[in-house]
Length: 506
Image (tube, rainbow, N blue to C red; front, side, top):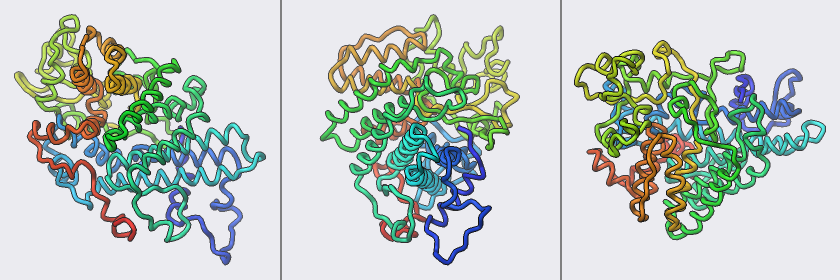
């Protein structure tokens, strides 16, 4: 949604000051304050816009381009940092799993998500008090529902990264509110799910959103995350796995039955800026180069990801193990490999060395990387045209895709001993890549296929580390990749600043 920098700045001020005024303070009539801000629907939407602004820490260069990338990508087993990354120890500490509580990327992750929680809480507390004269009931319900989703989203982001989490369910008005102890993980899961469940019925379907509101939360997004949170909960609490799988499956099925989404035939377009808010997009981080929008939503992520041979910073490359996994089915798609491998990365192959149809920005792989090179360079998140490398790009980032819903649902069905149903959705996703159906007859084989399909679909989309952890496969896969890792590094430590400033967070 469009973001107004003035109102985000005001919210930052509110967050720093709290919301309680001394009786001795004088009001300045022409100055925005907490008391005179929440006066109409436009102001409510501005407050909601500030709450959206913290999604993935996008308004922060350090957090979005650098810190998010090293957190989401460097902890995966199929990547290696580029040479320049070793100039930044706070980056490579994530790859080497020797981070400490003082790591800058860890501090940013905690700070930006709790700031988003604070903004969402301000919306929830203040919009709920607005009169019918100030805002119509339908708009009020929808804004509150979006704020609840965002509060759940930010809490879930923290929960999946830190073993110890603080529930923030109100705007702090005193030091006592700020000094709050950790909650049990089961309680945090319950809090997130309650927010999502309460938000879901008051959110519109995707088809009910006008074009100007694409990217704002929909009922399908709430349903998809209700499924995902329940699925992730299994990794924390195996004793109640049956109930969690049942609940997750129920919500994934609602997304499917809504008929609001379908797989996008242009897979690469979702990651190079040519397609935005496609039919596959359930929740998507918006970027635009329209300077009239109130904020310049574009980033240098493509420069960070792009290989140095392509004119980027060259901060990340794929491993031979990743290529082996992505090619393991062979040339089963009309004489080519799985289409997704070509759309995810550049590698030394006849497909990229076709002189009649040079596919590496108008050149062959050999011409760019060198004959007989073994470089595996990522193609996701870099622009369709080479002229845009070296500039900020407005490439949207899908945070939840329909393909993810289908593969998570297949995982649930497989755990429920429904192999035929699981294969239906696995083959649906494979069909988009032009692959033949798989026909497997055991739970273990279907699970292995799901693991493979998630690599093919979601490489460099930030899900691999969390998948391995919830499956109990982190240590095994890191060892196989020759990475230094111990189980206590599966979660980040509480940031040093939080431990220092919050006596209860010990």
